[in-house]
Length: 111
Length: 117
Image 1 (spheres, each protein chain N blue to C red):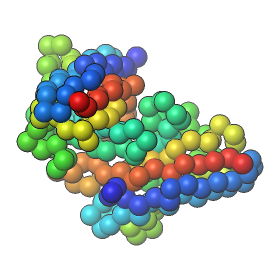
Image 2: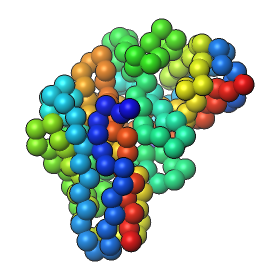
Image 3: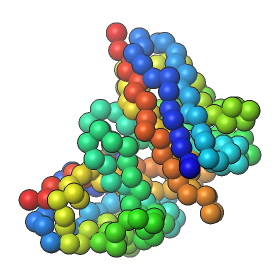
Image 4: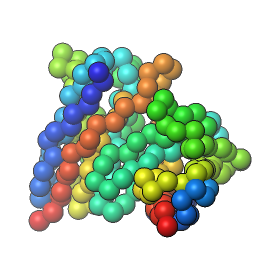
């Protein structure tokens, strides 16, 4: 069982927006502004899409945005495209001893 | 160009040992927080271990006492010594340079470990 809770799957049509939630506790998501999101296509390594709750690495489209409220973080993908179909993993810092905790991953299907 | 290349994975019987290596280029391993993250087949990501630039280390409870993270500064390489392997250690193991200040996060492509009889 993963430390962070994500929906197992979400879906949307091209051009629509989808939001993926990630719920933790005050010891991880709620306690630090160090939430990150990863996109993973089958057979590939994860790719960082969002870090520090809402920051985008260079090269990540601004269709991807992140936010946080209390113990829940969210990833929103607007203007869905076929290539966005992938698994998305959330991650939070959880202190020096348990450096990272992850969610179980959410499969995004573009209809 | 920053690059991380893992090696050392393979098929190992439960109870056995394996050492994973992560050869780094384009930066100095000893100056960074470095770690290992794994992913069991069809599952989510799972944090394993980290080594800080001051050489302190931390481990997930599931591997504490069995796995040891270390680095060889002369080879600019990160290691993960895995002992007493169990079936549930089967996973792709990724080497990660953790983001810290101006240092960006970076992942390797992973190496597959299968612990099975």
